[in-house]
Amino acid sequence: SSELAQDPAVSVALGQTVRITCQGDSLRTYYASWYQQKPGQAPVLVIYSKNNRPSGIPDRFSGSMSGKIASLTITGAQAEDEADYYCNSRDTSGNHVVFGGGTKLTVL
Amino acid sequence: QLQQQESGPGLVKPSETLSLICTVSGGSISRSSYYWGWIRQPPGKGLEWIGTIYYSGSAHYNPSLKSRLTISVDTSKNQISLKLSSVTAADTAMYYCATRITGALWDAFDIWGQGTMVTVSS
Image (cartoon, rainbow over all chains, first blue to last red; front, side, top):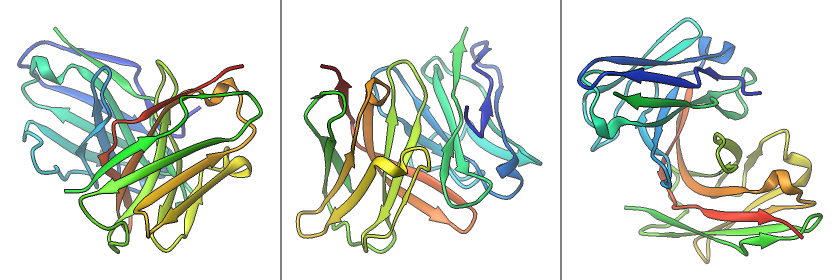
């Protein structure tokens, strides 16, 4: 089992706002990063270090953290946002990288 | 812009050693700002961190794989290699090479290769 827990599936109506969460004890200390993965493709980094977007990532993607929960928010979800989303951070020792189990986002 | 391309045998027999190469183009792997990581994804499942290495050769491994794993760097060839011994069907996965960016309290993998599929089967 992963040290970072994610809901297996989330859905959102087109154009609405959705929050995908990632929970783990290590998030009290370390920041989360987020990845989008579409079928048959490699993951793409969409948020790093809590709330930083790489070049080319739309500003409808944002990140936040509170306590041991990290969140990825998509404001005004588009059809092309339908994908699997993974969080990652460090484990509680700080020495290793861990990934969440992933959340499948469906845009209705 | 850095790019990575993974390569490997595709099919490995149980109990044998899996060997993969990540060839980097568009820059030198000796850039001090980059670490290099391997991540895998079994079919239909989530991402699993395998390990990370700095160009100097300093490496960190997933504790669950550490006893079977070796990651190394060849700066002369601009390549990162992965060797995983005593493989079983549970090691069947897409294997990705990625650049890791890091800060004091965070890590992220910002540039990913397309991955190479490895199947463990007799």
